[in-house]
Length: 100
Image 1 (cartoon, helix red, strand yellow):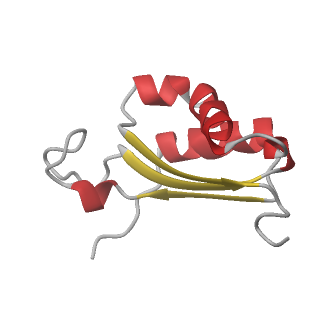
Image 2: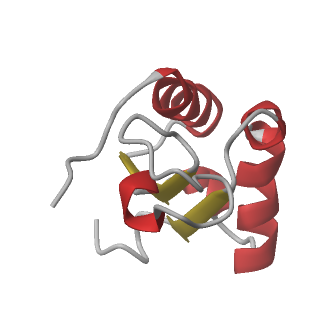
């Protein structure tokens, strides 16, 4: 199985979410290699940065429904979504929801 590649998009996602949401946990995993041949990575490039799985645990999500949390993340990553990122699989929780 191919390894997850970390590049400029991964780093930008981590930096932007970390700065804005001050998460107690942030995991950004590039899963582009799993989507070879799909939209956004039709050639299956090993260094593609098109598909990500992101887990964020932050107090910033307190009192917000899942849709609002996802909108927050999408808003923060608008530039990346407009410049090559094709898909984000999001898990957004508060520390209490995550058992922290």
